Image (cartoon, rainbow, N blue to C red):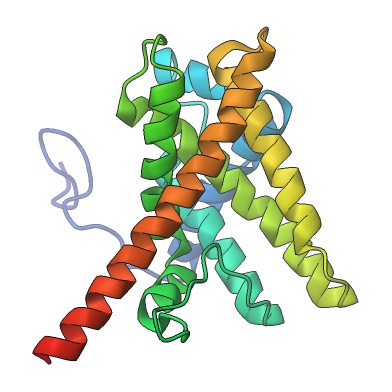
Length: 231
């Protein structure tokens, strides 16, 4: 057997050199329609709750991995945001002196993927409280939120492009659509036959955002105090 292949697994002993063709292949691997990000977006637009439930309990090969999905979609929004200079952040707050807590706020705006996952943890807590009778643990709910929040970033991206091209302030409309989408997707995930599921989903989202904002405010205040007295 050729020395280029392993005698046991028949795989290349030395991988091929990375070139332009390799990069294109990797991009196609992520963006291909079947079981790729476009397929995932389509399924999350049509039947979000049902598809995510199916991903968690039955088949995890049909959709893009949730962590990859939220990071890629957050990156798309970040690039569009920088391209059109739309300075819209999830949370903006001020410290005791009335000045914006720039380091924390800037980190959030520069790392939407990670901040979305962290924010998802707060929302997941409230979903666990309101839907405690359902047999989903915290991490399964967090996976649900990775998909839903990823779709939110794409919705924001569409309206960011629209605002960047037309200069018409449309992010408020995007926020309303996102609230509706979140309630619909999460409510469908838990029990699509009950109106209460959609209401509890919306309340959980609002409370999650509020507690996330409060946590950031506390962190910003503590950081300011430490900086003032110990540095």
